[in-house]
Length: 196
Ligand code: ADP
Image (tube, rainbow, N blue to C red):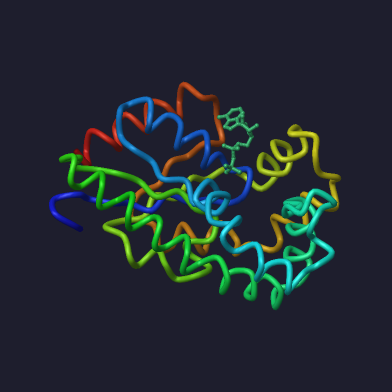
């Protein structure tokens, strides 16, 4: 809690519907910071370090080739930790800046959406943790429907994360997104009303 601003973590398994829930929350006028978006903003300043660690992930235009970098770090936990160590302090600083600005504007509630909040232990830094759930088959199906991953790649990304149950165990709030969007929307409205 900072200056009256309550900040909840928002996470779930990949493909479970975090971004969808984030969108539904922001449609209710509650700000959601997206860790992926913050990462995109800090990747340029971190470019020299990323290029030194993974020259093969730098495209001909001199920019980070995000898919190539993701493929490398998803295949090897040690590489993932290395990328985290480069990116995390920068993301954290930017997140704090944004949250301070929201608090200064008088917002009572905000969310911080990130896929690895439980894996990293950072979920403890928030005033609560919302975990979005969906059955493993639903996760895989939704990931494949995006069309940019093979079945093996999609499964590898699911397997690289903690099982959803481990996240559910530390959640303070759950949103079940296995059914249709209307059902999810109802839960999100209740959740936000209870937190406001
Ligand atoms: P995450 O951010 O957890 O990886 P997304 O919110 O991007 O997941 O959802 C994954 C895919 O599933 C997206 O294409 C999204 O539009 C779709 N999706 C999410 N929730 C539902 C739902 N309740 N019903 C049908 N499709 C959904």
